[in-house]
Image: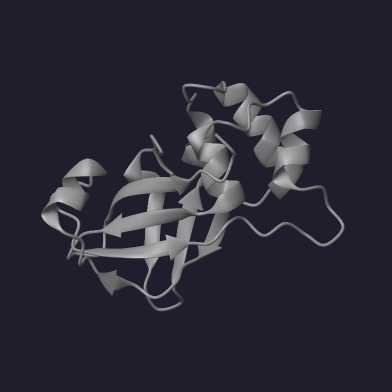
Length: 142
């Protein structure tokens, strides 16, 4: 299942030279439907320390080749010409998983933002290399 991740796409930068998605701190400064900005900032601080940005690895960027019906069913913006898989956040060896960090901090891990960071997401990209949408992978049992 794919979940809409409600983020300001201006907080995301695509680096096509290294195939990374660079996430600014702004992602953690806005409340989501499930978590407050304060909680997200605590999670960021515990997991990432004082890093100003997060770099997530991407698969190869491929032309969008889904049928129009499929694109419409996923509510993919019309500006999307390409897509890539954004791999989950890699934590340091020996640190707790993101889900365990969320449990310790009483943060809702069913939040699409948390699902994206812990399970990955499909990134939809325009022809000018701007991110136009993110759909988090939801691996939780129904």
